Structure formats: C-alpha cells, structure tokens
Image (cartoon, rainbow, N blue to C red; front, side, top):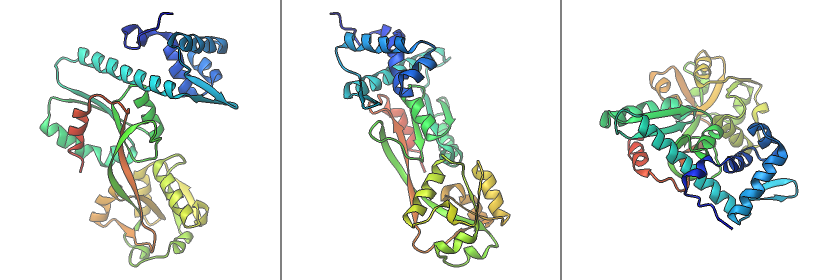
Length: 301
C-alpha cells in the first residue's frame, strides 16, 4: 500500500489531516463534525482512512474518553511545525523586504507591563525587523502555537508542560496592595486580618486569580474568606479602585511598580505569605527558528 510522505506539499491541503487536528482540538467526534460542517460518520471515515494510510494508530478510547496516542501526538506536533513554516513563508513572500518577522503572543500582565519596554529595546537594535504581538489568555495563545499561527508566547499562567517546549524567564512576586493612606501598608499584617477587607479580584479563568486562589488554599482559605469580593475584568480598574481606598487586591509587583514608586499604592506586608509565580516563554517542542526568539529574549529585563 502506498504510504503518503508527511513532508510532501499536498499534506497541508489534505482534508483528513485537518479533520485529525480539529478532532484533537475539540476532543470529540460530534464537536469536530460541527466545527468542520460535516457529518460525524464523515469524521470517523477520515480518521480511519488516515490511520490505514499511515499504518499507525493515532487515537484510541479509554472508556468514553478520547485519547491521542504517542504517534498521534508526534503527527500533531509535526503538522503544527509545517503549518508555522507555511505561515512564515507566506508572510515572507508578502513582505516588501527580506527583514525577519516574529509573530508571538503574551498574556495580559506581560503584554501590558513587560513587552512595551522589551519591544522598544529590540527595535532600537533592529529597526527594520517586523514584530506582531497578540495579547490574550494562556489557553488561546497555546492554541495558536499548536495551530502554527504564532511562533511562541510569553505566558504568566499554567500550561501543559508535557505538550510544549519552554524556558523560565523569571519568578515574579505576587503581592497584596492597598491605598497609600491605608493603615494596612504601615506594618506587617496577618493574612486573616485582611479577611474583613473588600477584595477586588480578576475574572474567573485569569492567571492572577488562579495564583491567588491557590495561595489562599495553602493557607486554608479561599476568596469567600473575605468580607466582600468584587470581580473586575482588568488590572487598570483594580489599581484605580484600590488607590481610591475602596478595597485591596493581589497583583504581580511588576504591574504596580510605577504606582509603588509614585506612592499612590502601597504593598501590604503579610506575615508568612510570600507568593511568586514563574513567567515562561512557550513554543512547540521542535521549534526550528530559535535564533530570533533568543535575540528578542536577550532584551528581557
């Protein structure tokens, strides 16, 4: 039987490979069929034909859970790399010059408080290079990496480390903050003493909220331990509310450095409560063009 060469150009146009990637992304035949606008039996047929042609098992069921085999993961990673190469080639052909292009993502805190300075320093040295940055949550960015839409992402949240290549950039302190004239910033506090305060917290699913929830859990507490909690979908509004002495919050120190220096906010010293979380750069395991990435990261503060 003829075996399709994975490195032939028609691979990127073969609808069965698209079905395979969509099925992994959606996690079920029903959802994949809906997204592809085809029937569920058609999805099943595509996968069966693909496995027969390649001579390997790509997917299997364990109970009712659809699992990807080791061969399936390898194929997924190689397809993602090929997709990224095709995107890079297309971008290069559309450019009016031959300067390198970097397409990447960043989560909210990094995108707002780290990347402007990093990009500025990089472009001072490489004014002709092309940079394209997307700011979004961890799940969206890792999905774009897998689909070959971006080269890498700088991420503050947790991600599946078995699925990606990565390197730690820094450990960033995560601190409590209060208004400049709040007595909470004048002396060390017990964590329990803060539970009577009004807490401003990011929306569910945000990286900073998960970090706070996990840190509280280790102390036998949770968000409901606070007298009142208000969800605010943005770092800027939270800082403004805290500066107006309407409550307290927990944020990365890097996101409030300016306010701490200017004196509009103060750090709350909390006895025995020291929290830090790593920032990572994340990419495909076999990411091929590491030179521009490492050069960009050399400007990381």
